Length: 142
Length: 407
Image (cartoon, rainbow over all chains, first blue to last red; front, side, top):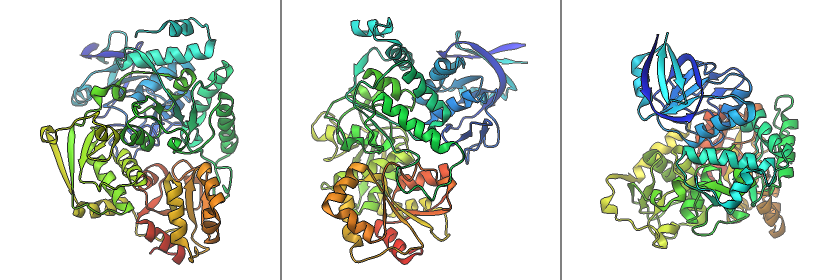
């Protein structure tokens, strides 16, 4: 079963599905994740203790140090990255991360931007999501 | 995006695979942000500390080096994770030093200006209205606010292709219409301010402004460059403020490039002296004894080094409690020539270059609790390095270093 949840703007094409990891709180990749494991250790964040690895991650936008994109990229290098991203608003950290993942490691991380997406996805409490970056669509699956 | 004839040729590979990859990345990046063209940039400020770059950051540089690319515009670099001198308190994990040295080497091959400091404006100050492409939040704040030049907040990673091409997509703060203040912050009762006040006010400005551009009224008209620098550093750390305007002080307001009618700013905040106490309480995270005093985030200017030497005259640090002063090698050399360095070292202080409080691997050191007069360092050290922090005035920092215990 696949159900269309929202449509938005393509940031990176490709299609991927995985367990949903949704937050409405801005997310800090620099010092906020452990790249070797994908574990989130961002203090005071609602996702602390969970893992980004293999998930479809929905976050409003990235915050914190300008090194956030390379922290994300190190997770890609070690294979602990989210398989797809949904953002309310794309920012330079997210854009740099998905562009370099493809150019440096041939890892395509479909990414869709849609204002208010994280509120919608958080309210639905979906177990699994699919992102089609080419269409700009996000589906619930399973 | 509209590309020039030269850019089309670069995409076709006329200048080799390095510039082509860099241009492909900048075009993809620019399209995400709706840029219509690339613009020339006068300089780049990049990063090279392993603590944040990891192997992935090395891989990016290795790729461009293997493609024969070189930096085309003056490119400075932020502090390293390990300085060239006095690293002995740190015991980083195996391979760390070798990787950091490889990072140095790769940037050297690419042609970096090896300042290893967060103060690129002391190497190549940007001209009013000029476009540059910098990382380092406090330097970005100075570019936009104090110098009236223009930079977006770069992510580390996209800075490398920018330096290789000397171009960057035109979007965000490169466009005048995005540099207009949206909120008003009135400071009441700040006719006289000491340095810590600038840090604390800046910290509040960041919390209030979040990622909006503020217009600040009520700062002393004679605020110095270093004071403005401290305010911007704190605001960029607690919020995401890459540009602020301040009545009578910042470049675009002084030159009339930005005309502000404060009455038309819908969101308004007032900051009073009473608000500063809350900042000081919030930034101090522990009642524990201090085992390290850090001054110099951002790296100190020559004026600040000379001021420190005057304050330390006739006083000596306790042997049990190190006082670390961070600056750039350029400023340290000036201090060597004018005798400032000898005075500080005679007082027992360490003057460190090449690295900084935030980029060094303090997690891999015996230190647990740091006293600092920098709101930026106080904000970052607990979150990124798990250290306890005591936020205190410069004079209290020095008294602590001299007494050997928390003053």
